[in-house]
Image (spheres, rainbow, N blue to C red):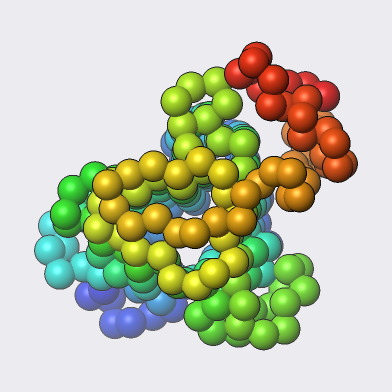
Length: 217
């Protein structure tokens, strides 16, 4: 899905979709006026959601809103990636969940030309999240279990606004949010399609032993 700044300002809505087992990313978004609402993008060979700048558009900006429940779990690389040269705003007015990805839950590429402002609670939320006001949250847990990966990794000039972040491991030379830890109070929930159950209090310690492989519990 492409939305470029020079196309007259039309809006694009991706709503109530499941994008899995694709050849690259589950969902690709570029440009302004893009809203992704109630989307599930698991089990893709790259990222669940790839935000990128289209070659040849030097003045291209990003303005993408994630609303309702957006779940980007169990992807081979990252849950959400912002590529080289992406500049603009990622608004999260719903619940963004990026759990159990092989590398990073959220990854912002290196280089001064990558500068995404992640803003929680920008605009009113609607849909399956059950939110009725502009709150917004990001939960990113249990990423990088089998390789060196992180829940949130920022090597660019991206920034994070808002307070409702849940994550444990962060890394990067750029700005990083202050997170509520995933353990011990947060119970990770994965998609029913992955054959996993919800973790209950106490179960998290099964996933914190010296074996770094992903447990099938």
